[in-house]
Image (cartoon, rainbow, N blue to C red):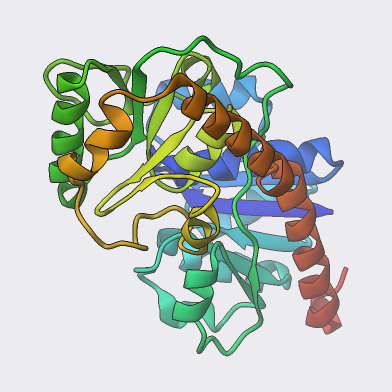
Length: 328
């Protein structure tokens, strides 16, 4: 299948999701092209080339059409991942007479009215399915997947090492400040991958390949993809964003998955007094049990391979339903 994926460049888990999807589509035998607008980051461009992901940064539909004609690349479907590139996606779909779909990655999607002009909409959680229940086009729930490290890669000695894996907004800042101060007071060594910086912690900045950090971390703090990656590496995770849902456990994981580990289950701020019994003097045995549970959960539910196969089935259905001159 020939697939164009479209997104705007963000330094967050959404972009990591798109590039992992590109890599896995290629591995599963598809031909892809990534259209990634607003990419003005030289190291990231270099990283895309190292990953052998074919990409262009042009946002002009006519330029893109000429580029595809030169490459003799005729798409069969276009998969968009950003509200900022949805209009471009629809234009490209009309130019090439192929179906288009968009994955909605966040509840406050800015161009909801344009979703109805597509052949399908992909939603990443059951919560999102409820919010977008009134869509007039077919919708599909496909939860995000991550690459699973090889068996044993996540094994690590117990130590109080915590990693904030997130891009922090103004709405998240107070929760992050409070949890950082609490962890430091309880004797944790704290670092950050993303844009969160605070006194007493080491900030790595944006990290493309997070595995080397997860292999040395015993607690990950974040939302969404960060939680899934942590669990895949056998690392206990604390759901913290604009709200705090706390430690992911066998008892609450199903409920937390419904909101894609966003923190919106509790809609409560981080509470040091509630976190203290869990984090001040954690039991290594309890932490080991959480590690095993997280890894097993990820193996069963979070693999990027399974996610990509589900998306492939959505692509095939949309192509088949499109019919007429759209069909290839």
